[in-house]
Each structure stands twice: as structure tokens, then as C-alpha cells.
Amino acid sequence: MSETATETGEAAGTSCGIVALIGAPNAGKSTLVNALVGMKVSIVTHKVQTTRAVVRGIMLEGDTQVILVDTPGIFAPKRRLDRAMVRTAWGSAQDADLVCPLIDAKRGIDEAAEKILAGLENIHGPKCLILNKVDLVDKTELLGLAQEANARASFDETFMISAQTGSGIETLKAGLCSRMPKGPWLYPEDQISDLPERMLAAEITREKLMLRLHDELPYASTVETEQWKRLRNNSIRIEQTIYVERESQKKIVLGQGGQTIRAISQAAREEIAQMVEHPVHLFLFVKVRSRWADDPERYREMGLDFSN
Image 1 (cartoon, rainbow, N blue to C red):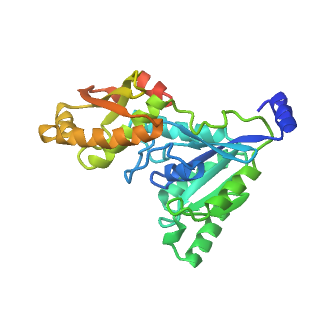
Image 2 (cartoon, rainbow, N blue to C red; image 1 turned 30 degrees about the horizontal axis):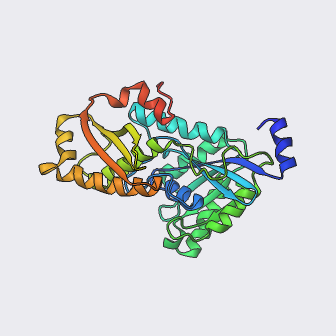
Image 3 (cartoon, helix red, strand yellow; image 1 turned 135 degrees about the vertical axis):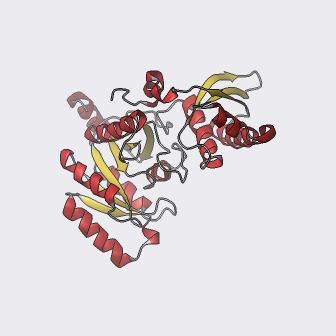
């Protein structure tokens, strides 16, 4: 933040900063962001690499605003999309006021966690360790895990939480807030995410798609909101397109007699309606776009770098 902004913030008595959450796929970053914000801003599935775009959840505690950056999981990249996601995750860490690696306590320091801890050598700002899913691990194991992680990287503090149950969340909130620099808020008081509603809606539909077809449709799909129109009665008409790479995948998404697409549409419509607090008319279309994962425009929309 600029010196002028900091001085203004001090006069107003507010603090604001950016926290980058980094970790392996399925470590629980999205679940944690939702728990800290108090509302769903990032989609969650049991499938790895669910998060593609950089999602910023906005947590407000008293006079402190914390921008939580839910980064894509860090893993061994194979495709262009994979490489873009990993680059974005580390880039977000470089730009943050505080970096918080999240380790799945049940998995411990596996190969993925080792790579993340090693990569922290290039991050020179403040760092706090978060051990997640601690409700699934014996206390003695937890202490050993915390000691091992702190021996590999220098952390200002270690937090032990369960994003799923909420255990330790309030302590973590206080710890994050205490480390935010003085300065004005970057977002309005009532804003919980930096994603536009139409993009959040597309993410909700992608979540329902993944939950329904996690085995049949690996990573070959994406969802775009093509139309968002508020009607006279204040309901919202939304048209979305699900893009897949092959004709055979289109048949899977549609399902026999259209049963699958109807189930996905109903689940997505109900959640989108809760988000926008208005009735929603959702229309889903499925199209084949063989190389959507190599389209620079898709990367720009997700906040990812298209270059190799």
C-alpha cells in the first residue's frame, strides 16, 4: 500500500491487508475462505484442483478488512492450464501482506507439502502456518507435525484449525487481523468477494457439474454465464453454457433423456437464487469447444497468465 493510503488509514483507524492461502489441492483452502468470510465465495468439491480462478474472499472484523486470496492448489503441472494455476498461486504469495501455507494435518508433510515448504524460501514477507483437519489427527502427532514444518520454514505463528467444523477459526481470524497493516479498506463494507455475480454463478454451476460427474468428466469442462437479465418482477434470467472438449462428454453432461443436465440446473438454480436473493430462471446449454483450455480469453477471465 502507498504511504498516503497508509496515513489515511491510520487517521481513520482502519487496517487492511492481503492474505494468500497456498497449499496442495484438497488441503481445504476454499472451505477455509468460506468459513472465514462467513458465506460461500469459493466452490468446494472433494475433487482436486477445483479452484482454477483466483478468488478473493473479503473478511471484515471490527476495523480490519482482510482480503483472503484462495489460490489454485500447488501441484506438479502437466498442461498449460496446470502451469498457469501454479504460477498464479506463487505470484499471489509474492504480492501478499501475509502468506499462509495450509497443510492437511491428516496427510502430514507429504511430497506436495514438502515442495510448498521448500518454495517458501523465495517468499520474504511474514508467514504463518495453518494446520487444517486437526480434528482427524492425534494431538501428539499434531505437535510433531508443527515442529517439523517449522524446522523446514520460518513461521511467525502456527494455527491449528478444522475449516470443516469451525474449530480454531476465531483464533485464526484474530491472528490474521493483528498482522494487517494500517490503511483504508479496499472494498465496501458489504462486499464478500471480488468476483462479479455472473462469474460466481458460473462457478456454482461448475461445482454442481463436478459433484454430479466427478468420475465421468475429469477436467474437460468449464462454465460461462452468457446472459444475465433482471426481469420486471425482479426475478433473474440466466443463460449459461457448459463447454466440453468432446461430443462424448456432451452426452454425459446431458444424460439419458436430459436427466443429468436437469439435476445440475436445479441444484445450481437453488444456490444462485440464495446468493442473489431473488428468484432465478436458469437455462443451461452444452457445447463442444475442443480447445477451450488453450483459449487466452478463458485465462483472462480466470485471472490466469496464458503464457507457458
